[in-house]
Length: 179
Image (cartoon, rainbow, N blue to C red; front, side, top):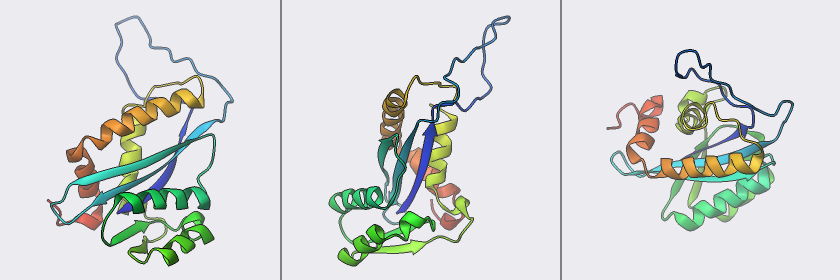
């Protein structure tokens, strides 16, 4: 299982688009607005041929820190059976007291830290890239609540696309032999 966090901003990621000749597309957005939606996700796979599953939580207007990471880990603990190997980066929240406390109380969870400065090893980065560059591209929400609703809808849709989830895993150099 791979875990990562990201932030979705109110300012849209602008991508090239199409429009009728003579009608330049215009995106209206609120300027100087720093609200965001923080998201934490886990991409899980059982064995080389097992289905890939996506678990996520959205947190509007807050940063994800130790207590929210522990809540997410508890959610995973309730939904997963058997031993779990968690791979993630060396974010301070992953090394914090709440995460260490969770590891001490749940021996079936084993933490493995990815090398520093190697985001390409974490397949969840592919989830963030797809979400931001596809359904949320050129989208300028009015507020964090609207962004939260749309991000939740598209993340739920992504959960129902196992082939795409599997592609994120295949793209990581850690899964050279995966089919």
